[in-house]
Length: 241
Image (cartoon, rainbow, N blue to C red; front, side, top):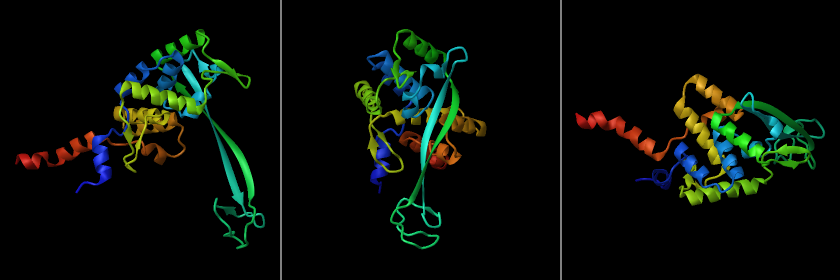
């Protein structure tokens, strides 16, 4: 008997393919929106990273963009013995005392990575800059002067106009709208389909900005169609004989 999760995976796509992204981009009304979709897919960056790209981060001569990833890390510890605490701890695992108010330390971690831009994307970026697309925010000329919510709405609306299906999470069976993160997902899956070697996987890890390869490995998702083809091959020769 098929489970609901297996049924959903066979009926829905797991990830966007390059042709789907082309259709998505074609539905963008403005050059800004087209560039947003293009960058999300072509460099596989997080939506927060793409929205933070400044004109100064683009090197037109070297055909690169520098991405800054800012992460706030919060450390909770016992005020008496300074043993590290979990988010929900009420008692210290070190000294056993009740913790009414934990000691909190916040640290910002900044990481930079420089990614190449393909020729057509670089031309689109240059055209967008020359047309006066960038806006000034907090003293910086950024490519996109829009909020995260607006970016999500742009991608969702373009997907609906393009007639793209919603995507199923193969681990949970939940169905989601096409979103900026699904474009990052599509980049990762496409990269692994082109080059699944050890070197290719390490390059992908660097491009995505993952500290751990285990995080990168989760992008090796399989669609229902691919699973069906693979499973069919397992028994093809046996049935022929």
